Length: 334
Picture 1 (cartoon, one colour):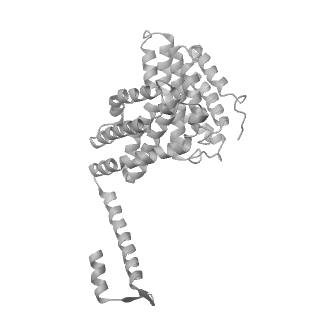
Picture 2: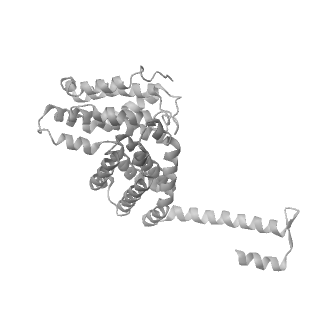
Picture 3: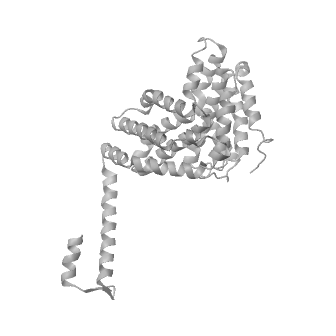
């Protein structure tokens, strides 16, 4: 481009454009911008035709900067909560979190490039993600709020950077990461291992687990219908991105509930889920009235799923969940 400009400068000092005499700097500026527009179109065409390998390589190249941007967004949204909740700042190590993010999303992109199914990736990655979760929450469970949000925004930004046609497939992998970090799955598995196969609590959980996602979708749709004009930080309740996050959250509440059932104490809800919600939901503009309705519907839907004869096995912990999210503590209304 610069060579073309020099050639043009040697023979022309002014040019006519739309009846107006342009100076040489104006001509140069216009031609430079026009070339940029043409290059943008070339890149857009390449994006539409690039192979899966090209997509993965491009996202790998962007991973470092996207991880940094995701941390900046996380810090901006909930950085003030560190002091407010009196969390030891040394427990939140952005460099360690960034290292974990990079390793996990490299594995995600490699699995995607190798045509590994999201289900298979979930199996192979669950141990690594479980270790990451346990490591960051070993001293203070509330740290998971910063870790999970960093991972979530990184996946979201990677998805936005990918070609439109590739996003649905990639988002299935990113959901695996979100689920494993937001939910205490390994903690539930470990607690389940302490029971005989035919124990009533374990049997009740086996009835509920296959329906977790369908229960979550039903509840999210009912809440969105009840509050059609409500919008969170990310957008309206009925929007695709908010609905996806909401379904994950209702699934998360269920996993925490069943973890308490299997551990026979309310520690997982009291020490991790509740502080996490207090930390994140106000910032994300999720009103407590919405959460209260969700918890109410959750009790109804699980009871319908497992049958009246099995309600006794989870009801005490469901009641704790209901009481902790009481309007007495969070009196704000929509």
